[in-house]
Length: 178
Image 1 (cartoon, rainbow, N blue to C red):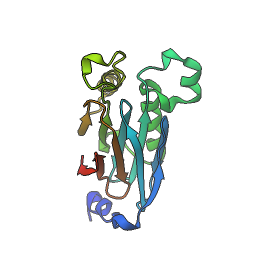
Image 2: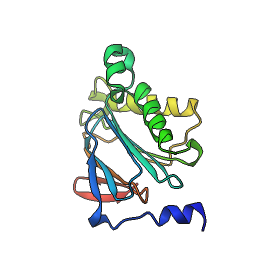
Image 3: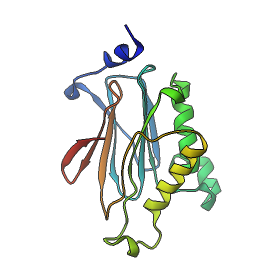
């Protein structure tokens, strides 16, 4: 049986999954196929998921800000808050559980504008978060497989089923697979 076929055998019916919540500036990585990792209220923040089907590892990071240089002490003590410190932590944590970069699928959601009109969004946090994320991925040879980013005052709920790696978004009550 191929490694991918073994990975697909790890799926668990959705109604039987245990949820692990990822708070704001938080990270969860799991190799338990009976878990679903979920985060709520992605506005200008970014939700980043990784999944390695061979190792059966999935993870999610809920990032708030692009660069830890605005508060180096917080960056050191809460690296999950920032793109530049949270992304390396997400990947290193997944690697410790057996994931390999070349097998991982990365999906991203969030990065909304804080105002109804993008031009009125003074700080452009959502846009800056996504630019910082793409920059760090580009430097490290990581491709984003799918994304749902931007929008005006859009709030997203995002989850990944560890066993299958399926990422789902819920926006304004409507669910879709990313």
